[in-house]
Image (cartoon, rainbow, N blue to C red; front, side, top):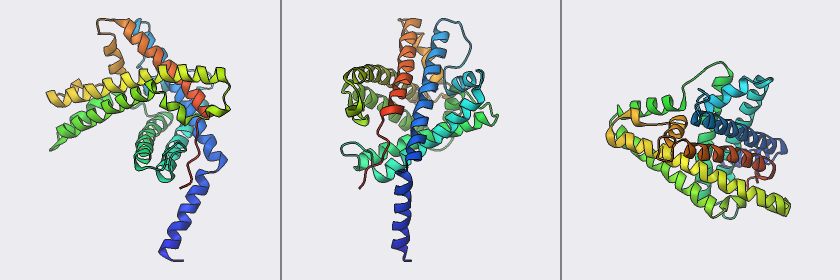
Length: 281
């Protein structure tokens, strides 16, 4: 078989795997797992706001909560498998395109690649936790990365660029929420009018909350780079806690936490109605 023929065979095999129903089921399990994590992060953040809990309002804290429930270890491994499905699904979209208008364009594929990298990192953290590694909190991870990066030549500018990129992602999320662009990713034609109305409300609310959090994380990274102080960098937990330090007090944190919980609920809508099939190009 020629080199081109071998490449085409690999491509066809990959497309066949990406189109298999079990592949789609894995992606949907992952979306549901993401929903569980965000709901728990929101609950933990509310506890932080009212001073009734000492758990970290991030992925680590959410996973610890999962493990602490009856049957939690089984659920944790289901989430691990689901996140693997999410990462593979996004890599498939990067290769073959998204099932949305213009999904074959480079911008859409790069977006999927970015998501794939994020889900891969999330999978690594979740798998490590499942295998017994307590790992670092989101704040510790952010500050550790920032310190190491800024210790290298040009690292300060790298941190600044990453901070700007994360803040920009927050802006895009906000735009997507306000314009309701996320509905393009759902099989809305299969929804009843009432279900679509609810999906729109929780989608907009949840996406706005996520946008604020991403914007905050990016802003703190930018601040760390400008001040050349890794301690200024914040992860999810630290960013959420800073919302409570604003003039609005803990109520702003409660509002954002509620939004993250609602995004978790929206993730369950995605688990049911998200378009997970890569387009044919």
